[in-house]
Length: 187
Ligand SMILES: NC(=O)c1ccc[n+]([C@@H]2O[C@H](COP(=O)([O-])OP(=O)(O)OC[C@H]3O[C@@H](n4cnc5c(N)ncnc54)[C@H](OP(=O)(O)O)[C@@H]3O)[C@@H](O)[C@H]2O)c1
Image 1 (cartoon, rainbow, N blue to C red):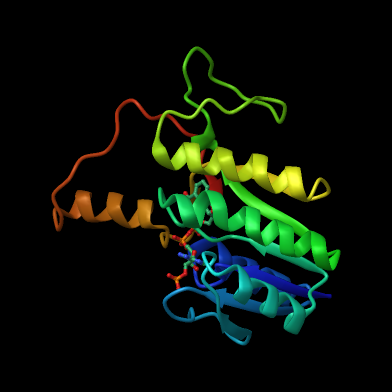
Image 2: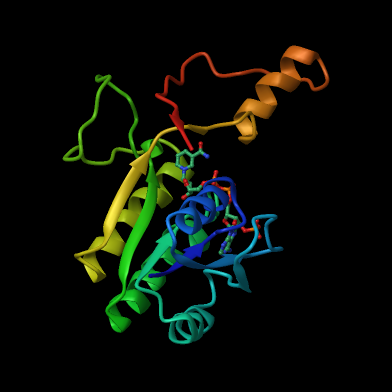
């Protein structure tokens, strides 16, 4: 099937392209600032703040499933509103959707483990935007999958792994959190 990977130039998106193609699927990947190094895949520019462009890409690619692996950090228009717009377009075309969310929707206050039924209680602007996106996506596209992942690492290539190695090597200044406990998953 054809899979549209929004944010295909990112860390997770690149791995999604690789695994989808290994499994025999056709991929089309989007980028905001520049295509990734994953190859071979078709690339197209897409900014999640541009709803008209989203519609055009969906109509052109006609994917069986769209995966939103983009990250706009705490930018509300990208991280909260963008996925909602994408879900509206996916629902319009009857396209299945997987939206990647984050454990950042949780505060961690008073509990250690969360299951799928846990309600968001974000404490950061990023977590609030991710929580808003989850609610919006499922409201307009009830069959969409919202997948909350924790810290993504792998092959030493994630930005967090790189930072740890740079700190250990003394090539950058900085500090790591002591009050932020997460359960890393391999990309
Ligand atoms: N990494 C983690 O540890 C972690 C933990 C929990 C959840 N997540 C979630 O997992 C997903 C993937 O994260 P990641 O670390 O792989 O992200 P990433 O490496 O930072 O990649 C972000 C992707 O989003 C694209 N993007 C940025 N601004 C955009 C915009 N305005 N419109 C459309 N696309 C835009 C980027 O395109 P360009 O490269 O062209 O700028 C890039 O392809 C995100 O939803 C993130 O919230 C990640």
